[in-house]
Amino acid sequence: MNVRVGSSVSGKSRRSGELLAQKLYAEGIRDQRVLQAIAQSPRHIFVPEILAHKAYDNTALPIGQGQTISQPYIVAKMSELLLADGVPDSILEIGTGSGYQTSILTQLVAKVFSVERIKALQWQAKRRLQSIDLNNVSMKHGDGWQGWSSKSPFQAIIVTAAPTEVPKALLEQLADGGRLVIPVGVDTQILKVITRHGDEYKEQQVEMVKFVPLVPGALI
Image (cartoon, rainbow, N blue to C red; front, side, top):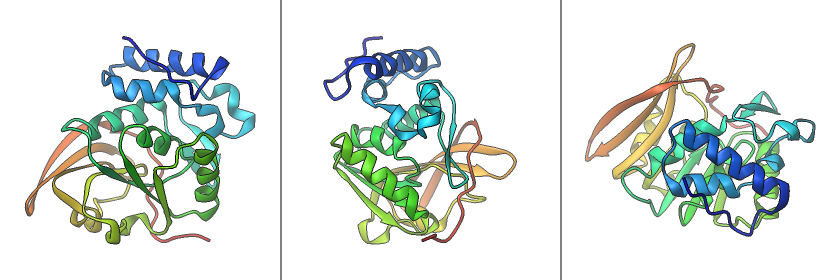
């Protein structure tokens, strides 16, 4: 593996990011674009300061409000799945959370639209992304189950929390030929890739995962 690390990350965090990318390569992540984005992203700024020493471990971590920052392997895997049919012009992300997954996506595509139901998390994520000059993202405070219809259709949609079933609104906002990467389930959750072909949807089951629930509604 040859991970090229840009100048946006330096020092200890740059070395830590590169080591994390190497771990993910060993876990089966092969897309060099994704690995480079992982290597360049300062994950420690997306976690609570008290957990910064664990930021580059391949593990999920709590970020408050009952939410988590996803395991880097899952972030990389879902990103890789989004790029499997080519690089989309834009991506809809459901669940901004800490902003870490968003930071990876903004390095891979021209434009990211991200929806978060918890206002405090959205504000923190926006501040973090701006601090590292990632500005090709538009954020909305709202109900992830409803997507972002005024910006649709989307060539790719990623959902970072698990609904009990695939939200109909997200299927409708998917462009023809587009793909939706989403965990679905309650106790048992399956990561799925759903591809739209006209009015038909082809579903692929990838692997078992564990996410927080995708809760309907929005919080102030």
